[in-house]
Picture (tube, rainbow, N blue to C red):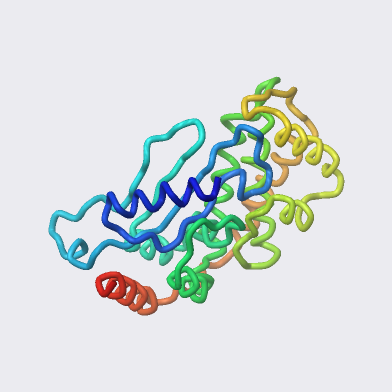
Length: 255
């Protein structure tokens, strides 16, 4: 499948006249709990020729392919990517820690060298907390729920616990988060859910697991209380990101 994904990405490069700087898997396959029918969530960062960044009528800074049952492929322009990094965008930290890489260049290595200097615990914590709260409210309160939805709540909660404990971006693999941060008292139930998630279709429903729901509600409140007591970190300036942007665009024009 990697060969097919790379082929599709190269086709995007040709049709859009861009250079893909890196491309990774970002969904359940990268998190380590894909179902048999999980799609491929492919995300990439790209650069355009320098003159495209000097236009008054700038082109859209996102490329999105039509969804199908197998592939969900979209990417961000370099300009958008670095502006979001300055704001400590949680999604970008995930992309850069994905264990499944389809395309990488020197840019990816350079970005990884500086990315943690733009990490804000408080900003990323709020991202994961809001994700967990929203998914819990929308998906896990009925008597019957989709098993996969538990992981869309548990994973961001454990990511919050990781950040609060370590002050660093959380790992992508759910099993690593679970080993490090999940309470022993519910590991048996979560392992049961993992087995269901990985061996049944995405739409498979199960009775609500009240023990896990109670854990979620308790930790949503605990995490919120801890975040509220954190101070804002001082942000780096723009200089490194400006340099990386200029060097990357210039290098593309020289090829």
